[in-house]
Amino acid sequence: MQQVVEQFKTRHYPAIPALVENGTATLNDYELRRHCVAISVLQEYMTLPSDPSLIPSADGALDGIVLALPAYALKGQENPLWKAYQDYLLKLPRYTRFYILVHASVKETLQQWLEEQNLMSRAIIYTVPAQYEKTTWVEDEYKLVRDTRDGAVYMVQPHTNRKSTDEYVCYHASRKFGWERVKVPLYFESGNVLVGDNFFLIGADHAVDTFLDLNELVPQTKTLSAGKALIEPFQRYLDQERALFFIGSALQIPAESRRTFCLNGEKWTEVIYHRNKEGTAQPLSYLNLFLSLAGRNGDGRYRVLVGDPQLASDMLGNLTTELATPEVFDNIAEILERLGFDVIRNPLPLIYVDDEEERIRKWYFASYNSALVEIKGEQDKTVWLPTYGHGNWLELEVTDSENEAIWQRLGFRVFRLADHHPFAAYPGAVQFINRFLRI
Image (tube, rainbow, N blue to C red; front, side):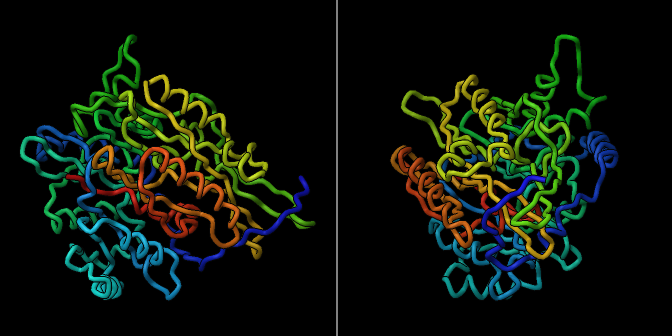
């Protein structure tokens, strides 16, 4: 074991056990593939958008935001998630409407706060039935699509959600919000789809999932690659006009594992390459954790911010290169450049949280790329940016400031969001700033 002598970095906010409990899928790969075929068979009975167009990730005014607020996000006087939600809602534009799904047990808490802040008139609230109390919820269960023929908004869902009860919440919410709901024989999760003005990006891992689910239904020839075979169905169901690019790395990415080390004379265990599976093509499970769309530059190329762990390590003066796999992020940046994008690198620190009682250290990325971006025009651009220079990680004020400066150099007005550690550190935490509607 390697001897490590360094400062403990314990959690500086109250624990929320539900975040850990909600990380496990309830369906296996066999069940997913059966349901994929079932949706293919039943599709002729569904009302699909005639001319689907994805809601952009950055381009356009922020007309509305969809939030899922499970009970664990509001309960408790010092709940760090509720503090972050409050900060976020207060910083959104005055014209933004809130479409909120909330558990019945905390609905009164939410409504009381909205009324105190004079925000109730902007909110449409759907109360989630008690039987869905333990679900991780619907944050990645659908993409919002507008039918350009009649302007109708659709909640387009993958054939199956890995947490089986999540789709029932969507079923009821679609009726409350007045949106059509449709399931398609593809696998995707919202955080792994980024939408530009005339293109969209999908993480390669979900392209692989879809290919395996549809292996008997996707046409293949000796001259047709799996990627090209999959472009047609994704465009057919999600967006028929935008170009589609699958994003991932050709480098082998280590899978999540545990190893022992010696910390200040004691034996500890650390969790490394968190949430990576065998054979993954992405360094993080969602594109929006390491990529941000930032509009077009002066020569017409679309800007994409790509997280850079090596840059963050150099700025902080630490040695996280071995665990951060910076080469993978560099490889993805190179691919995006070859596709014609204007790539800008931003610091992406790899950090950890210590559990002194269990003697476990868990590594995770402090993602600044999971930001909310609004581009109303070249002179009217805003970004809401997560921050991490809090608690035991005050040194991350350096990367907070550098990420803010990068956006400012691109002409954006920047709103710093509150402490984002509780979201980044746990797989069950919602990525709560990635669901929106635009005019």
